[in-house]
Length: 293
Image (cartoon, rainbow, N blue to C red; front, side, top):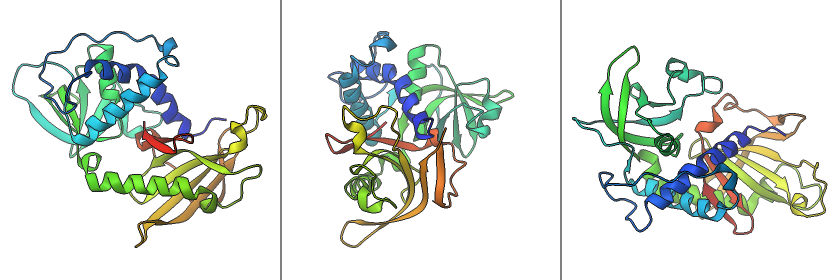
């Protein structure tokens, strides 16, 4: 079944090669080290070996998330000249899912802040992968501005900023996700038909609203019907309680349809959002942990 959340999962697969490169480049280095340090050319990674490198990729994702949360710089290119700094949210250029990217259809990435800038300078696939890591995140970008029909920024380095490095917000989000994982069976509007519900993934709209995709754990059984589809979705409004837990209000409830989720109850004022720009988390039921992808 083609769900909205799978867009982020596909994007993750495309990014694995770049993430593994980042891990190899930074082995033994301080994650927040200056981006001006010299680096070797990244080794190419065969996409067919993604499964074999899954553990390495998981570790690399953790490394990148640590770099992001610490506000450490990542170098994109060595540039000569005076650098300017711009802030905003980095986006892929995808006119179909993000109509706002239409003016940048001849580019790969753009920055949305006080003004919109096309990001240029991705002269190699590795540089392209490095920018991909910051998709949908608040960032600071340093580079050399260029004026044309579309204002461009030739990128020298980039780092996470704003809510991405706010320790209080990061801790609160982690608590919120852990609460959802532990309470999904009471949050879900209906009881699991076969066994019990387990989170699959979450897309954070903001610190109050979140999509959660969850499924019946019968699908984890080796002998279960491979065509069985139990994936459901809720749009939750989360409100902190005084005891450190949360109130979870279901705003919209989706059930499996033929090609996508079907809204069963409630209303979804966020339904037209570009979900590839949301903070996407996957859940590991064996480790009982969430990972930012």
